[in-house]
Length: 299
Length: 299
Picture 1 (spheres, each protein chain N blue to C red):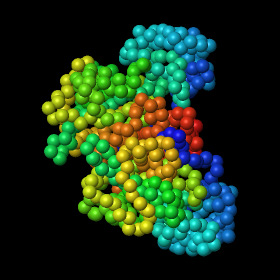
Picture 2 (tube, rainbow over the protein chains, first blue to last red):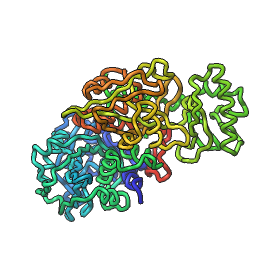
Picture 3 (cartoon, chains in turn red, cyan):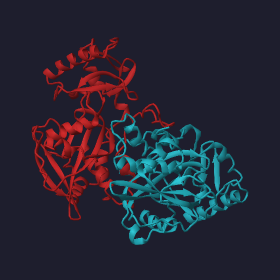
Picture 4 (tube, each protein chain N blue to C red):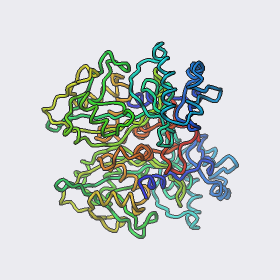
């Protein structure tokens, strides 16, 4: 087991296994052919052919597209052919653009390989010369990754919320971090990955914050998503990520990023460049229009 | 001008413009066809055909390959067809391996698009609530980027030196940082890029360290590479990187990485994911053998 195993776990993607998903001629996602075929019974919402899936083809208004697509998805959810309905609208946009073309319930986002974003907070404490990190254990009734280890705060970013707003909202719900304390959290970067999971293709940007917490602060979960919090010496966190798969797949990468930034990994380890590159590895990511000349190779 | 302009400056690479360079059947670099053609006069050192260049073809011993190749390169250097001879041997290895196949003088490394590595140190000072960063101005007689701004310490990694040893050696030569103080520097990650420059294709991994310096420490250059050091408020550093090209191309990326890790960039800026991904963007990078399943797409 090694840090690279954690990164490999977040890089399970073979381009040839997917068909493109378009809205209004713009690429927004990737879908497996068998999932695409299962959408043929909803021709108003999904135009399916050998070239891929078009969402709400011919419908110009984003609100109308949202209604059509989510009506069909609700049918799948009622039949248990789509699990984990959330009533959380996520924005669907072109890979290289910013205009929201429609909203889709979070439960369906991986099925269509839509890019999503989330916010993860590393909550740590300094005691003498030692660093300790708050670790959450996910509730056993969570839809994804029940019982796995997690950051003190982590949450998906719903439509209409900024990154900072998501941090404050989730900080209060998941760990009872007061507004003023959450306001001290420092943005420190992001990780990117593209990986096939049971629920579909996860193409995520996770925005990362660090927050040094006062030793007397004790997190309390208010939304039932975390079963318990524990304060671990950083060495124990490092070993759990390196030697086990106890952390949720993407939370492991957030920990590795923290360990690198705080100097716990050795640059003379021959794996170091692969690890740092692997934390921001998504071959489908298209940078914003003011783009590196080369851009990503087509996949 | 923007942070993305700095990143674009380090992503000037079109795969179709290059031929592969091999040693003993292993890919080690990329070369432009006109540069490849100019090597035909040294058939013992370089086997040139439409498929690319093979270094020291048929020669099994690394030391013998090194002799053959560098003898030819010295002829080019004497004729001023290769500038900046350094007498610094750099290791040449397969993209996805670690065995050193030969050594090549640093001056020729970009001509053959060989991967290289370096170490850059962010030297900063806290004064009250304020952060200031030491900035070096490169000597006007430097071969590359004369007069440009640089980190307090930055240097290429020669054959046989570890990352940490390179930091200590360059720290003493470039800024008179004593061993004990340099020992406090914290490794914080790496940047990767692949970009065409006047000297050739730069495919570099730069290992990054942060060092909080005592306010009374004043750097002194001992090797003539830095004309002067200045201590700038971090806001001035940010503006110089964002709004000008005063920093050397790769030093700008090291500053942007520092600014991100220390919370000076806003994750709600729509460019944020492109910037963080762009700091580790090399489409030719092959991770180590324990590899993400997808790996990089072929280019």
